[in-house]
Amino acid sequence: MIIDGKQIAKKLRISIADQVATLDRKPGLAVILVGDDPASAVYVRNKDNACKEVGFYAEKINKSADITQTELLSEVERLNKDDKIDGILVQLPLPSHLDANQVIEAINPNKDVDGFHSENIGKLMQNKAYLRPCTPKGVMTMLATTGIDLVGKDCIVVGASNIVGRPMAMELLNARATVTICNSKTQDLPAKLKQADVVVAAVGIPKMIQGDWIKEGAVVIDVGINRLDDGSLAGDVDFDSAQQKAAWITPVPGGVGPMTIATLLENTLTAYKAREEK
Image (cartoon, rainbow, N blue to C red; front, side, top):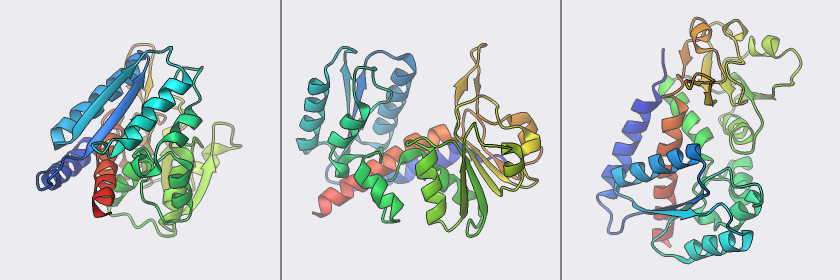
């Protein structure tokens, strides 16, 4: 069975739009794009379009690649104080002369709709999550649609980035699954994966995970999105061979990607509601 991220994301966006239609003020999302990286520009445009679709107020802020750290932090602080803005997102990666961690920490945690601020990650660790990292949260929404009960299941996350791998492991742990974190250097990775009921691949290596590494009937979530030499996109899992073994699997593209953006909108609405309740 294919886990159709496009369809799940569409339903989520419709639900958000229905809620926004009843509000006195539009939730506001500001996205800062530094430089002219083509992939980042596409992501920002998709986020901007998604905001408009659900009725958000969207502010797209383009800054030149030579912006200083001080100037970027000043822009973040301006948005922290802007009452029209409920969520702030700084598109990563940033140019190498900028300190992304310092920029993320400068965002008001209550407006950190990416869920990357150490305060929000800490809450996730304690299972008190408020604004959760978008991709892992989106994956949990996708897993819920399968009807699989995660309690006690053996889950393996391949990849340990701060953006996906680590918070993904915490999401699964909070769902009372048994979680193992692996990476591209893990010894005998195929043998470990053959024991997993759920595999989340987020390692950034095209088609690294082969179908014969997958346990019969497993759920496979492919977070990876890699552009091949011929211009086509591929995930971290070899889809054609893995779908022969998996009970459920996400495609690339059309799987996790749309869910990440829909979850960003969901987080922005959550931030909006929290501010309005104060």
